[in-house]
Length: 587
Image (cartoon, rainbow, N blue to C red):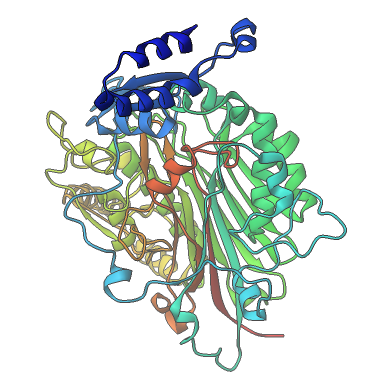
């Protein structure tokens, strides 16, 4: 009918109009429905179309996750409670009951990292070849193995950062895997061979916030961009175990480990892989905590010290965050060869309670200092891992890596760098914590001498006190307390643990901000592996960074739909570093 009408119109057209008529006929004829299509039932499409002049585009019913995330991050701060994330029951100061999260992805005025400026950026080994040298295998922490069984005819598993087809099979979805490379430190090529009587012990350390399932449900608004399938524990657990197995680290430092999942699933799986596990649950009602696992085939446990930051009756230290400090020694090392002190923690999240974060770290540093220095006065290397809920350029991280913090006139909400604006925030008080805590401004316990046999220095002090009268001892104790109070009032904090970050805050070669956590309201770096550099201890007994698993920037995370997703089952990325430690060989 329609075509016959067009034909009748064509007979009345002038010759100069025929070209326009033919063009219209060509454009409209293909879209005319056939009789069979007119009779067929219509289907409701899950996607809708919107048209404009000359353009037809397709839109989904929901905005893409990365656009929603970007819209939220453009706001200066988004306020919400911290009771369920990163610890803490309440917030009576600074931020009241509300907080804010904001991006620290690209801080203005910040240039490339020191590693970049000094030309010490590690080389990137992204294009892994099937053939690898023995040095490459050693650098990557050995051949990674998987909890998932491989087919009999499969080749050897790929090195860290490369996903195998076996691991991909159960994780297929619209998200793709993040491409992470192994970055080799340039110091490896210039590293001198061990001296006579010394030998090199290489080991790898992973730090990973695996996202507690109960915290995921309690903070579900952070994960609205995720599919329900990606958030189910039945899907997340195999992913997490496969990830831990693939990277095959000698030491695992895990945060947000839910207690029931640890006891019933995670610990049995790790034990089957040859790990021994140490766990510390948070002191409050939250079900998660910190765990450290190490390979018994390579390391033995000398001691384990759980650390609680909660102090009853202390208005500042009323949060339930915890930490772990353990001492590890190579299996084939002599007892006198020393040890590595490994610490793991998850610091309070609340961006506006920098005073609580500093006090928690002071307790942890005091425990590390006490544990890493035996009575003979020797010093041993330290590896400090965890989710510090602080950005790389923040005063808190600078305090850890420089050993000094001047905090006079420092707003309480600027300590962690999670927020930019400090208007209306109170300043840090002096002293930050009460002298009754027993920790001085050097982040050491005031009284560490328990007996005259504990150290020569303590014995000297006790011999001097034994010749004093009771009145003299009381006067000295009063003077010592006054000196401690004055020291705490100097508006500065210090610690003498030489610590360096395994990861620079910016990516090479373009200087984009490195990201370790990403969800619908923030994308920033808050996870760290700090270590004692080799040159900072006598005789070069510190640690040499050999390599690390690269981080990514925000664009890469937007391409995979943010975190978590079907392939990556936490809102944090795992950090992995490999170290060399020179130990005395007494075999």
